[in-house]
Length: 343
Image (cartoon, rainbow, N blue to C red; front, side, top):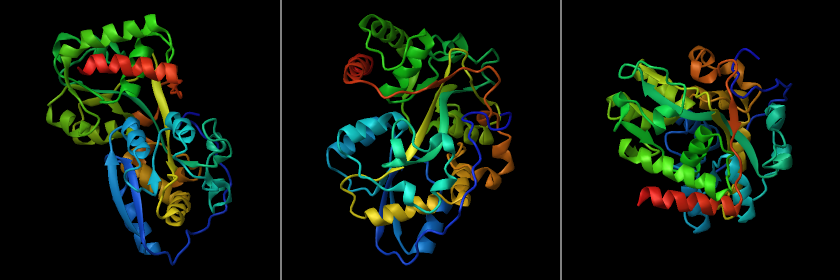
């Protein structure tokens, strides 16, 4: 598919129904920072009478820790696909019956009954995207399409690198650069990852998954780990910022709406999910955040600049690496490496 090739989806016929009206009370939403369209929330509140209270986090690890501690009392959370099995194993999510919801048929066939949630018993797709990095090409004019830019930066970028504060994402990127499989259980290969990240550390100005756009636009950093949608928003403010498609592979992912086991307002959570399954609402989220939608009918409602954005059209021949759910052994090795890096 030539257009919007990042995570191609099949267009399906859909029976469209409005979200249930006449609701009341609150909906506590816990989502990634700067990842919820304000207009979407306002529309839901107006249609249903439900007040939405939004809190944010910066990584899947933060979300997992919050839910495991029993804190928050949230009604909807937004885990990435590779963390859904972990949340399920911990008994932290409840079934939502997505296949019975109005608009379920709008979900692209590729994301109905996905491997991480057969039958969509617990989740529906929120946004689809990739993880790479953004470079200020006004400061560095060379080829940016290699992870060497981040891990062994040229002189122009040394000391000006921004990395996520997430072991899963940083280590997955390092493994991809070194040509090793993700969720790695090989101690020798993970030692190479550790050595790479230790050598990189003097060139890293910040480990932070929040505020990426502002750091890039202000020039506080010249290259930063980034998601493709957030890179669009940075480029809108500073045209010299470009998103890389590393030759070693671009990590891709699907974020999902899910309802925690201890949600206080599960019916309002299901109302929001049904509301989001309407194509115009899924498109409103994509128009705000800059990511692809798992809703096959949303494309007709996308803004023109999103349809043409290079960050949403993977170059021909680019290697895509779909992130995985890791074993406990792999997570333990990952945590050991991360502890050494951050000490």
